Image (cartoon, rainbow, N blue to C red):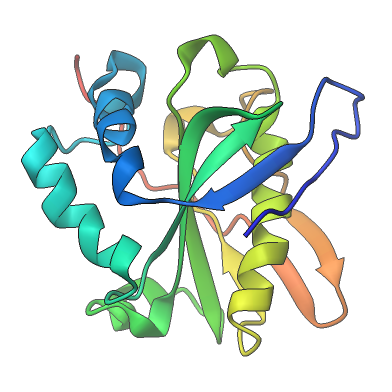
Length: 181
C-alpha cells in the first residue's frame, strides 16, 4: 500500500511504504542485527525467530501491521503500527490517557540514511496511512527513547496536525537508555 510523502526540506525522494512480505524477512533480519539498530531494538533474533515473530504480522493474523520504508525506491527500514486496544497489554500501553490511540515503531536499517531527517518525514506519512487503516483511532503515539529527546535528528515534534480530529502526539519517553553493543 504505497503512501508517498515528500520532504518539507526538499531533501531527495519521497518516502513510501510497502507491506512487509515473507521475502523481506532476510533483509529485516539484517537490519535488526545491525549495531545501530540493536541499540534500540534489543531483541537479538535469528532468521528463524524473525520469521516466527513477523510471519503472523505479514499473514494478517496479528494486530500489528508492518511495512518496508522506501526512499527513492530503495528499502531503508521497517515501520509497524497497531491499535493499543488490540495488544494483549493494551491496558498498560493505552494507559497513557489518550483514548482510541495507536502506536508506531520504526527503524532505519540503512545506517547511511540515519540522521538525515527521514524519521521526521516517515512518522507523519505513516500516521496518515495508519489513520486510514484504523478509522476509529483519534491519536497516534510515538514514544521516543529518552536519549533521542532534544536531539535535532529526533523522530517527532510534539504534535503533528494530520487532519480534523486526528493528531499525532509524542507523549513521552521510554526512560531506557540504549543497550551496550
